[in-house]
Image 1 (cartoon, rainbow, N blue to C red):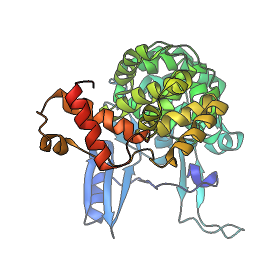
Image 2: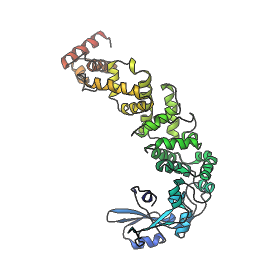
Image 3: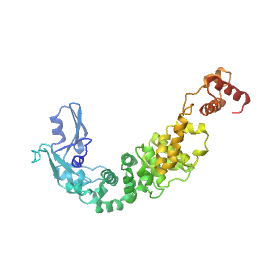
Image 4: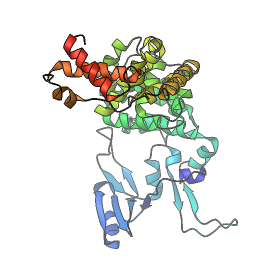
Length: 386
């Protein structure tokens, strides 16, 4: 309902009804009671799955996540248990067409239509009570405000600030999911600005850093989650050198429940950005090509471009030249370990060193064919000069 009224394409539709879960199951042949105790049933019809929820009122939230018990009720009570007014709107799709010919009717018990018009995120009822029920609602308020370009209503914002420290008791997995959704948005910098302005950032990230300028994050275009995290960390001056990266990645991994892949992407992007900014010019051609062909390079270059467009443009131009210099950025190696075995080299650490040296020479144009690569390998093995 909310997205439709804002002129956006809804990603899905949920159905709410005064029918009980038992009544819903009796009406349809294929159902799944995913949350029947909370009045939620999945209905599967014609290849489509629809979540159907029974109108309810919630009891206390002892675990700060789910109500201890619910009572099935009516639409008005159901609206008043929800988090924000813009999320408490209903649509009656069967209402007769109005003068414009549009079918359906918005049903609003909590002032959500007015808040949509005023572009406000407002808690339903007492904001302190809504946050006490589930402190993750503070992050949801930020996400919705950033996504739609809304302001957070002053009383709701003040309650978020008062309860900011209590967010530490929320599951880190749930916090990480909210941050992923924020950083996936084109308005990610607005979300970060709200997080920091409301005092949520240090709780979310497990301490450290300082309020960021947001400059680079606001210029970062389409990017992966790891790149957006790295850009946020650098905006916050979370590290001065690559040596500090492992501690930061470890802390953010715990704070946001990052996967191994996400942690690696954050670490590699941070290292890459710092090298592009501080050490790129001093690298050999082979080293530049190896880095440009690495999985993390595109993200690191995107973050570097958000921080220093001129420097990043120079790096990008050089990489383009290297890609067309005759050798390419990542050509297939001219020789491999089987070639060393065939020439009588005993397996061991020397393999990797010889192959790396020959491949560097290939990248820099020093060896141009297989015969030259084999001669270089033989010389290196014979002299032990790797």
